[in-house]
Image (cartoon, rainbow, N blue to C red; front, side, top):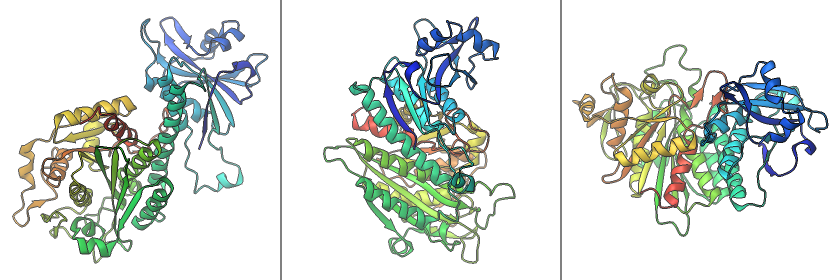
Length: 505
């Protein structure tokens, strides 16, 4: 993991591979952002003009490298675009700082140390730059031989935030928080990127047990025998076709002074072939990512423990592999769920809602103050919101709004979605209490309505459909890598922080 430090030293005297400065898009051309004044002075005040000559405009995503001024111990200056220059009474947004830092960190892969001289007005700015740098420096190379023989470029090893205040309590706390959250978010990315032949339900459960011992969590794992005895028909039905049996994992973080309890529930389909309702060609290759919800929940619970938040947080990981075989659940089968309700399975590729239903009911039995489930649930949500935004549904409008605000504050794109009651009728079944499919139009909302049926009465609940942003198949951007992104981790952690502070619920 990339190291993060604060520094008050002069830029010229710092030994590093590069100095990162910000450049904004001004009305008359590129403008050097605050934080890089001494660097600009070393160019005789002509850094902006030099960058413009090199083609830089200050637009978001731009990265321009140039030789460092004479007398600097770092050989290279890296100018990153911050986007439009803020107005006279405005500041650079946290997200613009995150993305600029992420772009710089990615561009400096292979470097040992970089000094970031970006705008730091307060501790929150240091948090944004630090978070962007740590997330942008991420790489998943566990399976690449080049990473072992030295031919690959390792992530940037150390980031020093110039203008930070190492002895200031707010700055120190901001950095400590950023390191904990970024490390756990990157853990979630690693899990999503791990091939399904190495991450089946049992392997995932074992990783949760190891993390539990390390961070003082209580971990309970239900295997096939325990799931059968408990009547978890949804999880068992989805995992029936695989040689790798399903698991339900409960991770519990408890604070001795907490008076609130949050439950996070994650969909953990370690590989999704669609089952008997087999996915068409071209839709299978990235299905290792179908456990991204469980990865986010896992990471968020561990982060809450590392931060020592004054709130009890329970994570439920509903883990199964959805495969076709002679023992697999068939379209037309009826499953008796953990809640006692029966579900007619019309499509075995609508499996995520089945494992979540059992886990939601288990979470409800503990009567938490709120439940949030996270899942790569529907392609319909991607059609509605694209690849960068997750949908939020809830049985409480105020809670849905609070989650939306927490996501925005954390730098995650999200959008509130409705749960229209008229769509519930489409899931009526002549055979069972409910079918796992309903109207095709509004399919993401139908899935949310299905899950709502398995939330305990009177419990505040929200559903995050992260199908779009959980896995990036395109080129990296900002601090977002190709592959697993860690979507929803920061939102869940922020919800836990707000609850601990008494600002939520």
